[in-house]
Image (cartoon, rainbow, N blue to C red; front, side, top):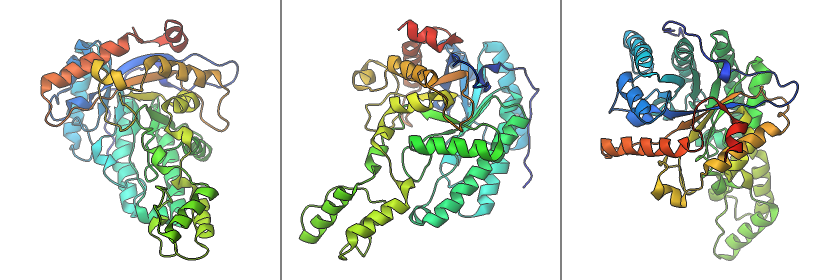
Length: 411
């Protein structure tokens, strides 16, 4: 398929998001506070509107969601070209820049890059991602996205899963090469929280970054969301003893433990004498279906992968759901996302040795407020949520461009 590349006039951008050499001593990334304009979807659709809301909240960098009228699959080329011009004009007027573009609900709702039909995979890669890369590069912005998922039938079949996973790695490597050719600051894929939407574990994320780097020679990074560690605990890998207890309970008609078996819970052979052995073999053949306890710890994600996360999505959560709540007195009372701990965990990522085979660590991290607006929420409440969240985080990131070590030292 032929991609429709839409460039606005190229602008010089900061080298903050570019990868740098990992040789020598560890370096100190700079921190920028931004806001995802997903809050403005269907309400404040003009760039001048959502940029002004950001400016009024003391935010000078925006993540432009595709849902806010810039999705290439929904927007004709001439309209998208006009949208890019409006962004440039509003940016010059408000002093707010688009730091990153991001995928929205449209591409999240499909199997996308891992669709069982290769024609759909080609369509998403060339008519959505290639276009978004070009447009982001034209504004000097990075691009983050999540555009794939595995069906249940694929998850149950290790061979088919391996084939689609390998094809995903190939396509991501091609996208990373495309991004490098057009001068995109960074390209990153978002981490999720369930087996059908990898990367969803720490080790799986590292494997993805290494595979893409090895196959294409250009970096792909990870968008880290501090609320995406709520699902992993439901998919912990069972051990031999746990499986034995599960099978014994089935045979004796007792209460069956709540155990994730990778979809084998309804298998017709669970009553067979060798059920325990077969379950262990089933689990071992499908490691991609299971998490470890540390995968449910947002701070462990930041400590291990923070250096490879040019975008960190900020939402408040009590750890039970990923509701993209604001940071205010009510939500912070039970919230587990603590700015001090987030910043210290990120600093730990840079204090540690680089991950072997991974891309170079980034030297700018854009902490991006990602607060969703409820469908029936009053507009004034949405704006208040953005302002309160921005005020809260400005206590820890008082100005953009300060080094991470400076921010941690001031805690």
